[in-house]
Amino acid sequence: MGRNVRWLVRGGLALGLLAALPAWAGGAAKTVRVWGDWVAPAPGMTVEQTRRAALDSARAKAVEQAGVRVDAAGLYQGALERLHFLQSLARGVIVGERQLRWENREVRSAEAEFPLTAYRVEIEAEVVALPEPADPGFVVEAELNRTAFEAGDEARITLRSRRPAWAYVFNLMADDRAALLFPNPYQRENRLAPGREVAFPKPGCGVCLEMQPLRGDPESAEAFLVVAFPEPVALAERFPPGEPVAITEFYRRLTAFPLESAAMRLLPYTVRAKPE
Image (cartoon, rainbow, N blue to C red; front, side):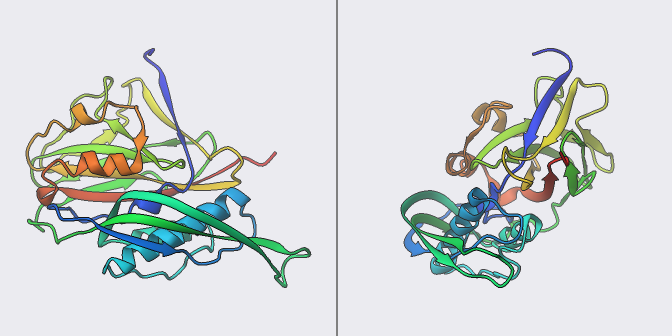
């Protein structure tokens, strides 16, 4: 790669499996089989976005059926609202999933001239409940330069910690994959000194995060996930920078590390296509 790398961050709803923000000290997975709710497209939603929302509904029910509390307020009203919904799944994580059956039916809406197609899906999911962090005092602050982007805008993340910390930034992507973005060959140092800010990408490092919506989506929703540890860990050995892995494999690899001591921050955002 050249010195002016432009990592395209493509939007989309990759957070259906992100039911985990607190750290996980390890636990047995519970397998559940559930149908999601019927989901019809809201104004401006594509068929693919509607199907993703239906899948997220099934995932939420799987987490809830496994004994984890879920707050479903705000579901299906748009990209940002779906992100808020997924953030509410803060007590469990899906580490394995199979889509068993899809169904569709026509529904009528006073706002639509023609019947709409609603979808639902049955899944089998492996769900792990999460404990509270072992050290609530270990906190890493993370800020995104904005929460709403237009295609071609650049993202920048600012990290801070009151204690020494080693931070990692992942992108949770539209197609249910995740990739490590930081550290990387152009910005290797990921230690956060107490009280000092670290920017990613660092100005002049040769990397920029150019935001793009998922192909075909008028507006997409996605997130960066920041994971920080109080001691160095060999996390980059399991996640080569810029190489995406399936989201379930991402969680399986991540839980091999001492997450009971980690601090995690989710930075959701939306990306809107430019008007034609």
